[in-house]
Length: 588
Image 1 (cartoon, rainbow, N blue to C red):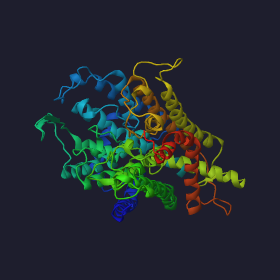
Image 2 (image 1 turned 30 degrees about the vertical axis):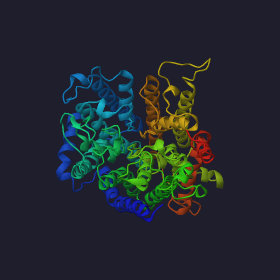
Image 3 (image 1 turned 90 degrees about the vertical axis):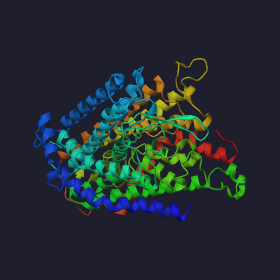
Image 4 (image 1 turned 45 degrees about the vertical axis):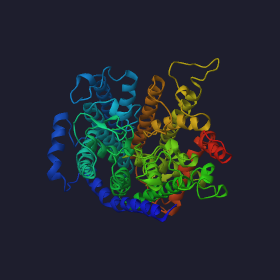
């Protein structure tokens, strides 16, 4: 590691820390219905939206009604994205005439589930598959919608903790509208303009044919990239306009655009911790969660940075260092942009997998085994290290409930969190969320590790799982595991080395995305409804404080231990054993 690389990481983290309080306080005012400096500009749009859809902003919903609204919103979004893809050939803004034939049913299903669940996993290359209209009207719109839905659920859970003896947790339609109008839309406009200033393209031109240095011809993609790039990162969506994602110079042309992209990914998740503290009336609670986020983030980024800088020991003898030092001269630059180097690649990989974003500026498949393990494990924590917009906060609050439950068992007291007793119903709902996501990851990964295997007795449908792996051995397992971890965690990044555009992967990864979104989210809305109806208990000398270093340590320990106990066998068969085999001279 270099001092310059460490300074870049510190600069990035400092920006997030500085912005957490002002943006968090602003969002608290928005979701408490208070007037802000943006109301003179956008209040008309908010009011018009309520009038068009027939919503009364002063009418709140029970958790069951809130959940039904969320599900109906998501079903409508799914159908819209699916049918726009299927009708692509007949729609405008398609200068390349994509869509003959139209997007296949299985790919359209996968893409629709991906974008309505904030996963934005792409089993295709955007510049060679989808028209400008589909990119704008289907994908970019869902980037706003799915992000706003995540924020709304987080705010509903916060209300459940803040209120007492109430039957309602807010109004889903009002929360989604306010998140879009006052938070996502204005920040996206500013970010889009900044991206254009850095050279990110924004046009509706046909693709350009250029002559290469060797005299050949190359088609260069065009399109409305900056507008999608802004909400892609701000909404922790991650779907790239181009197949190379944020490694493409039209999406991420400069070091400043690279920093801006990472900043946008963490901006809202970091600020929501302060929003939480303000809405419950104790900002120390929000800072405690921010501290837990920060410790896990910094640990992850420096582990990745260390192993990527050390590189492959088998190549050490090709550089100025000796094999005895296990160091590769210059570090592991395979799959990385020279423009960004190892430090920014390690930082971007950690940021995008801490948050449920999925944008990448380097290929994780080319990381060293333990360098690639960190992004994988980040998603396995249920994306609660900053996490996605909204999903990071409601995910960490789930672990807060689990942590105080464990602490209560240890001392023989009824567990409490923020004055609310944590009882059987809340713990059951939390465990349902954890078990459902683990089940999705492990069962689908296990099935895909054998389906297509050329041995008697195995189902071997055309184009099935392991026939589409580039690598064998533990690295091949990591490729399969990462795909289902990314989809279930609603992250969307790809390890690489896998061809997922097959009926098997499109269908099973789509199901994993739905499980990871809704079987995680619905139980937490049930928790919100249950907690809102409870009376707060005054703190006593025996109450466990949840704003100090002891609780932060317990929370981090709970997250890491649950993840390790659940996924250690799979990790041991993948990146861990690959690390030891690499040091013994074997690569995959």
